[in-house]
Length: 455
Image 1 (tube, rainbow, N blue to C red):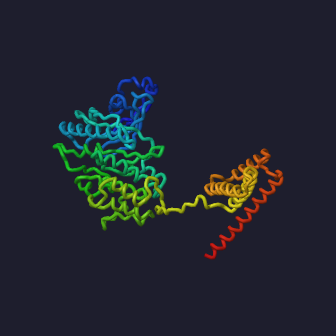
Image 2 (image 1 turned 30 degrees about the vertical axis):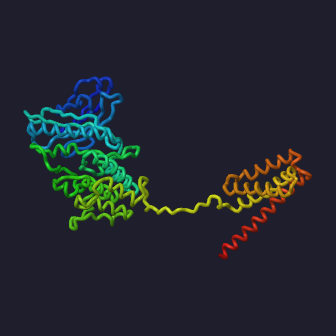
Image 3 (image 1 turned 60 degrees about the vertical axis):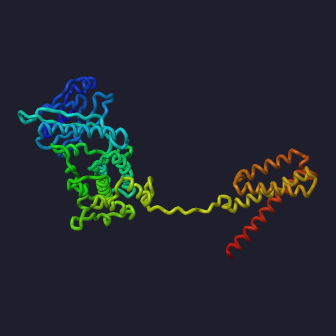
């Protein structure tokens, strides 16, 4: 099994131990040491680093596995080594701040699903490569998000569409709302700190524990961190002044325009006019561009003051939640016409049904009641109800065949409903009534169309 040494500048960090290929041995073995520099390899006795994920000026990140968890849970081990030669008091203060920040990270990771969980934090003190000295390193162990960060995605797939950046903007704003409500400023939002998991879910990474530690001077409080990502940090952060929620909003807007244009942040900022020049490089909804430009204003108090304000502006100016590239259309009430929008065939079919069914009902009622006047009145009411049911579409399609079929069968099998007529005569009269109804319906439809054209 290969185990990667976490000591900075180790000449040969890759180590191979054949006995660790056996899972039982891996879980029970004592500490292993780098064969080149002597650095302990099983961090905190349990985390086995296998690969370097990235290295910066203040530490590195490694892919690791937890040998004490069934299934060897993958995780990310972040290493921090304080810059400069710090005395014991300064190192103690750094450790206290590191622990305090780690507690905050543990809390917000547990409470928000788009922030990686914190599994552990601990210091490691080892003999230095320089004789007679010691090196102290701090480690954070976090949840491993299997996917690509947006910087990698940009390089691999090219610039993002408007729909894609709106998705990123909305999702990260929701995370920032939660973070800012906890009194935490991220301070380093950029494409490489936004990870897209394989299932598409976005995560905000690197919550600045290292940055707060490195900023703390030995004597105690300081104004602000002097560590930032060039191009993404607003003026107040670069000047080392106090940072605000709008500081993160500025960096998020820079992230969005770099994803939209596919260009580095430094190429989009005109130092001569002290303004961002990005709108001419991409075609987007002007209302979205206005929102981004307000997030990019140089003065912190001129920007949106919270993630909530940006989300509100997006919901007012653009289609919320489900993001589209086209501007939203104003919804226009449509006239309700579910009962009147009948096709010609539906009208003629309904007329045939009404004529045929009306004739059968009239013959049956006359046979029962013997009074033409009462029969006419009652038949008219029943026929009116049938026509009303058609306008409401309670009777349609196959009902227009099934109901007359049932009515005709009743008349056929109940002789006293036939009166003095034979069943053949009744059928002929019903068909004739249906044809007459079709003729009248066609005539009135033609007259209606002619009048509509004239008017």
